Length: 240
Length: 252
Image (tube, rainbow over all chains, first blue to last red):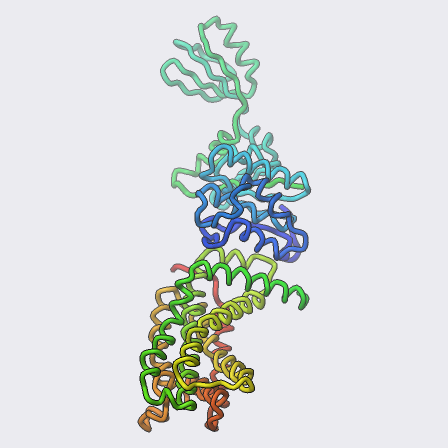
């Protein structure tokens, strides 16, 4: 985390308004121009709208935008003042695929320009796509804090999937599950496991080996305490 | 924050608040329709409408009423509506102090007061004997401004301390007593003694007397300035308190 001895001044950080909060009668370019008017060196409106895929909607009243467009506009205005730090809370929830990727690209290019993003999200694909440092928080406690690779390595790192009529006992398996002829095996060393499997001469097909995803790591980190359905959150940050 | 920055930000907030409001024109017409119609139906047909002094006073009263309507509804109810929206909370995160935002509100309301006064002034000018010599114009405007300050502060207090529904109810229940009691509908010289005694202490009465004096040259009662100053101080403090404690909409 970036720590400030004193709270950061309003001009140094940015956060989007809730998308439902855009003044409905103002046009898209007016919303951006209004926020831009508070900063000495704002991102030009046309450039910002293009970055967030809103070009062509400048004259539309914000109340008439679709949900995804409103959200993109709301996130866009957080960037207008070129802040050092941006706080984003679930920025792409409910967005379609193109819109999500447009938003991610915009976040990445801001980060390349030296900005810091603090992203809070339950959406782990987003975290994997954007974050450099990940902090998993479960019921107010930090469960993990590190790079994506480090957080992933907290769980048996490899998942081996295959189809087989039956499998013999395999030494390298840490955890396994079976659904009909589909097996899912978790292991620290997938190479050794596959070698062992081949040596048993047991028939199998559709072999798949993959790294544990952040989602799997997240579930493993939070599962013992989630029976109560307490809200869990991931916070991660793209550090400078 | 430097003065020039504040001036620029005030301009920015005024421009966008004005734009936002003017896009719903009926909201602007609404509050100013009633005083114009009152003048047309209750003053124009009367015989005193042809007496310059009385007609001017009657028009001046309704002008104060129009200002009060805007203060209570545009500011009172309008602010209450705005501050429950996430956008209002968001603008408080922008690098701008309370002054440009509130001044922006004040100027926006003022602009709509001026727009709203146009039909009223036209009716008074064309259909009654009311007159306002150019020499009195500046004085009249200053008097109206002074009369408007406590009303503006009441509006802000309501807006920042109550929910939308409560603000609407309070604005409506203040509007008519303050208007009648302050002599904005019937001139105070028609009041019974007891009502006149109460009326003297109302902000609307003091404001009305100030504006009537400024437009017609009638004698100013000795209490007017004192009462107006007292209300300005009281309602001003209330408005500042309400603004400071506002945290948007809160649920228990």
